[in-house]
Image (cartoon, rainbow, N blue to C red):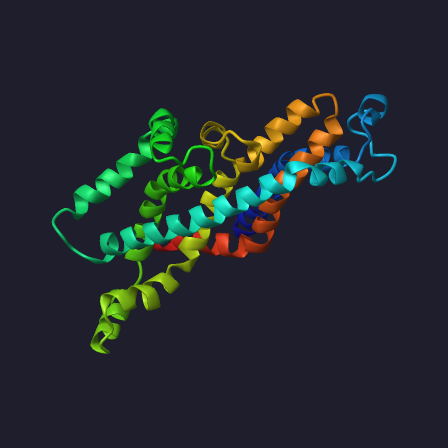
Length: 284
């Protein structure tokens, strides 16, 4: 009887493993296929997709599309996106860490109220703030500049970032702080020397999560910038699509260059992302 149960359990385990593999492969195909389709067609000539078919391999690796895109205004869009991303992420992570530290480690009267208000802000649709932010950027003479995007991007990411970092910092053992306090370590030094380094997995996860959102954000970039020299990559895709509406391979090359930095970032930082998610799952 035990042998039959063992065999049945083993068969169920194999079936579950096969099903899991099928689902994993299916998910990978769904995720990777559009990117492969985009890259393959970006190397085709203008009318090759119409004559040979969209799923056929290119007759030759034609890099003229990429050359024309790079020689255009693409680098200007790219540099603007990098500047906005780096500055916004730095400010966002530092402000979130500064807010999460007292909320997670100290006790004071308004702690629950402040934390509840921050969490409640997560339910506010960001696009209802579009007109007030537009008016504010004009009043501050920041309209049509990349600096007008930094404030909204930071504000959009603060609620979720403070929420996650607060939960993450609460799990750091208080004995470490107590030992540091005995050695004469002050609160400021304790934050920068102990809490912040130990919160790196959470900060890395938030950097990737918010970075992808900022890199792909369109509506605020479209509303708060006007001149071509101050626009970011999502607007480059939109403008190239209008400029090369009949040249699909050219549009595919723009899309490939736009998503490539985020894919490379994830490839090189995926271990930090996984560690941060796993740490949050275990500690939470």
